[in-house]
Length: 146
Ligand code: FES
Image (tube, rainbow, N blue to C red; front, side, top):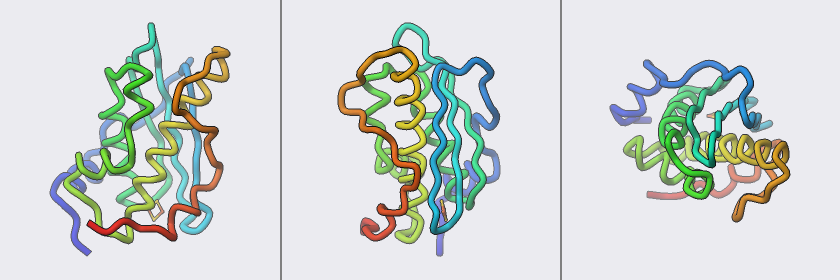
């Protein structure tokens, strides 16, 4: 298995590790198969993601994808944030081995879960956002080839 330099960098020096006290939205997701868990905190002001932090108890790719996903979401409007996909996270990391695609799905779900929490707390509907799954295991059966 080979990892890109960017994956290694974000694994060795993850950005945005930690938590945000008084976060606008918090999302926790897991994958029951590998047992990995991700928690994402977002600070949203005036419809813009001002800050993002994460805690990940998981594999190296889960750490790297959480790191990149929180980097990508910072500064985005809610509308843009909803459109961040696991594919975008993988591309920003110069790819992941096929068996690690589900780790990037966990990152996408964690961002969405935090946005969902924000929407619930503020009584708003974010277009295109679906209720998060607690366990993203379903994704695992359909790894994407590159
Ligand atoms: Fe489960 Fe990577 S092996 S998130």
